[in-house]
Image 1 (cartoon, one colour):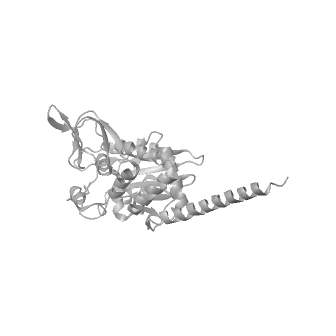
Image 2 (image 1 turned 30 degrees about the vertical axis):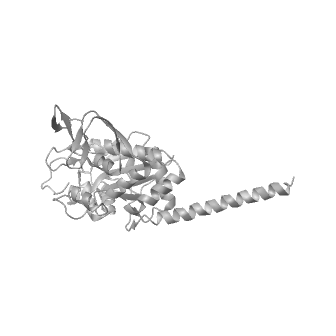
Image 3 (image 1 turned 180 degrees about the vertical axis):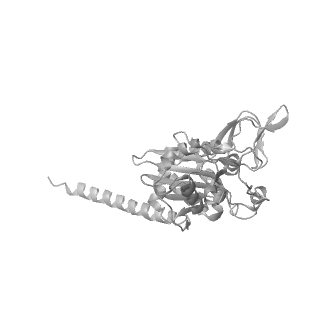
Amino acid sequence: MPRPPRLRAVSTTALAVVLVAAVAVVVDAAVLVHRVPTFPGRLPGTDRGSTTLLLASDSRSRLPAGQRSRYADPLQSTGERADLVLLLRREPDGTTRLYSLPRDLYVGAQRHRPHRLGLALEEGPTGVADSLCLDLGVGVDHVLVADMAGAQDLVDATGRVRVRTQLPMRDLGSGLDLPRPGVHELDGEEALAWVRSRHPEVQVGGRWVPDPASDPTRTAHAEQVLSQVAGRIDSPVTLQRVAWSVGPTLRRDEGLDAAGLVRLGRDLRQAVGSPVVTVPGAASGTDVPFTFVTPATMRALAPLQSSSCSAAGTTGHGAPASTPQGG
């Protein structure tokens, strides 16, 4: 039965509005994705599903001058390292999981290129992906890197994050300063100090002492911030605002297009709803920290193994012959 002319006109108008909106979204996505710079290089890939390497760089180049001096490292005046090394895994059935690796993981000895995993970023983002593949057997399909300014902008674009401390807490190295116990609402700069805190102190009886409950891997603090940020990216409008604000502080591999970034955001939001897998290792306890690969490390990484990579069979036994500089 043919539709009345008025109903046909309404349907046609509605379809036109939907098409115009769809084109606008596609064009907008194309504009937004071009705000995220790319880097060249081939990635090893995975057998099935998808694995994305997420790196938080300690690059200070985009920070205001005052913050650059605060985070200055006399042991490394140039280059960059990875403060956080995360792997976002999406299985073929759509389930996702986030893995956190120690940035001080000691790898490469079997290739006569010993280094800590985070230092591989000095060779560029593909350097970290290559090390994961050659030394640990972990394949990577895509890479997304955020620098310090990006971490701040991400929080400022989505709203303050809330953390709780039982005692006053500080970390002179990261700039963390929480002078009272209880709930704290942190802006971007404060959240960055919270995530980067590695040697926090708490105030007990008027004296500052090392926090016995601190997490030297920084995973717990990063998970707190990521889960709150991801939970607030709940609409296309919010996603657009975040992408526009944070885009220039990110870097992506050339294969990570607009659709891939949208899917990545969705997968990350789903993953932070589940516990993060903290990949274990044997800590060295030395002034310059190392985390050695153990059988438990390889068991934790087993779901990420790819036939395109051949792990060097490292077990991490024994201390390095020499100690690289830098954090």
